[in-house]
Length: 147
Image (tube, rainbow, N blue to C red):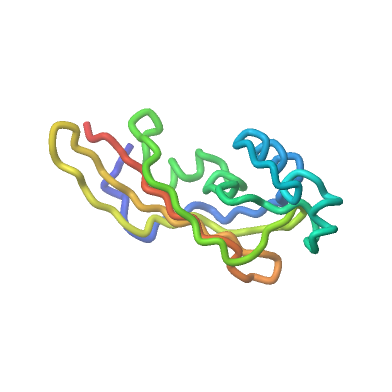
């Protein structure tokens, strides 16, 4: 893995995909969400939404793109990385059936010295809706152990 090519601005290939109702329901059940707008289409529509609503935390960099895209684009060895901090900025309601597109971009890099030195990469994934409006921005810190 040639990390000398790693620079701020690297990006994954563009991705596009449709948010699936079944995936929203699976996630909601896994994290014990009880609000029916995240589980039942009729309840979501009755509450004024287009379809089942994506709950907080559902959108991650891997929701619509492969893990391999991130690792290859940022020159990461999957065996040497850990997921660090993850935060998101939800700008629009996302519902089942919405088609989103975007890409992940390496926006920051730093190093941690000490007993277990590591690289810290900040990768930002922006999801746009069909009208090219920003739906959500996800920022993740990936921790990479040095050789």
